[in-house]
Length: 115
Length: 115
Image 1: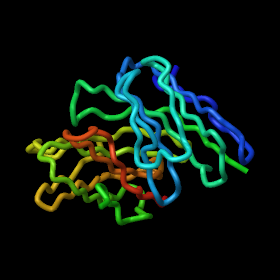
Image 2: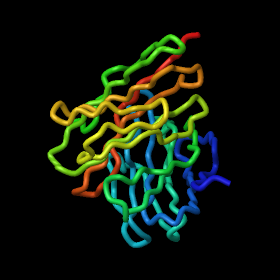
Image 3: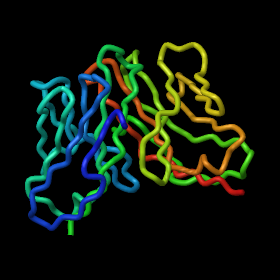
């Protein structure tokens, strides 16, 4: 089983619908992140969480919300999906104890299409 | 200002040849880490190599090496003896010690290995 699991892997939804992307991890890391990837733009940070009670906005948080239900679970919601939220979404985790040399571990990604 | 710049949207290399993927970064933090990730067509993000700002030697991991030039703020990835399986997107990323300690990504370089 993957250390960082995202569900669903693919999703097509209609404009205006609410959708939730879920992420769970077995790595025991305290930090969790949501990124979106668009062609030519790389990965951009949407939200990040240092622990269950510490949630922060990233570069592009407008139109998104998150919930850290437990240390191992971090979900991303689009309250009212719009077509320009069509993208590949990644959940990632890292261990805060290692400082700058800690890599991020990624889920397999969720490909979201808003029509 | 962009923290990570990758100026090569696409690169081609002949199989068995070496290739260099460019990455420059911008930070005033004396302590930071630099990372390279590979994203094959299947979409997952694979960690390749890490370089710390205080590391005296260039990092190496098998066929991957990082050409770290601190004064020039560059962290180029060198892939030796390219293989067809190296065809993928490659992302450079940086984590700073100060602030939120998040991982910032460049826009990526798509490498195509030609048989």
